[in-house]
Image 1 (cartoon, rainbow, N blue to C red):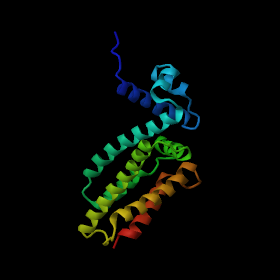
Image 2: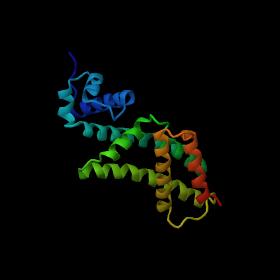
Image 3: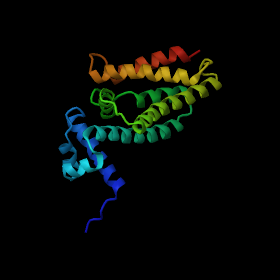
Image 4: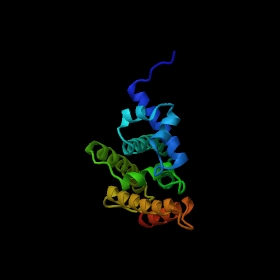
Length: 197
């Protein structure tokens, strides 16, 4: 006899199936049936937990960001040199190519933003953690004399993230010559221009 999944476990199972489906068919063509097939459930059962397709996309993005935040914090904690930490953060931030699932989800959510306050607060929290982590690295680099003094490290980090957002858009569009390596190089050039003595 198979053990019955509790509600949070079922939701997590559906979101993992959604990640697989999004990777295979893309968020713009995703159907509830695609998720249900990969989850081994009926479409109605999937809808019972999420209500509508857009809610699944937002929830999948939040799961993806949660997992990346854990990985980012662990990886950056192991990097002693603030310059290397900034470069690694930029790699983690930027898309791995035009088919990067997390960034494609961001594009869908930006195109059709959620309306409920709780979800918007969570999304703001994710963008805020990137800024906080980068600001902490910059502050450490300033203290160690590796970076020039900065009046407001959080504002500086926010601007750097916005630069990377812009570069990410070019990568997602698949513009000629605008691959992940190009985006990282451009991001680092802009960041070093502001930080290095």
